Image 1 (tube, rainbow, N blue to C red):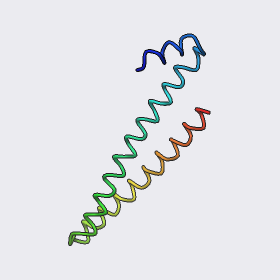
Image 2: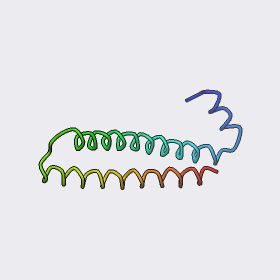
Image 3: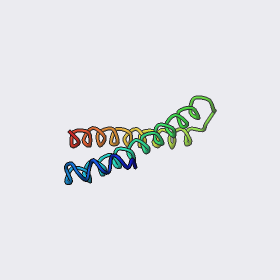
Image 4: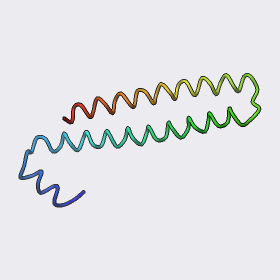
Length: 87
């Protein structure tokens, strides 16, 4: 944390500073989760494209990809919602 920023928040709006930090922490966590989901998605898709998997493995991987895509969309909606709250 920047010491100058904390001084400003103490002398400025006291009620808004904790809210901003909570939102920024949530945004940071969501961005980290989004990155991980995107990484796993690309790995799963690469596995499907490059290897000769059995039909059962294909179905499992496809189900996992669908689940991860759903997570990605959920995280995107949460980020947008948090950004709206931040305004």
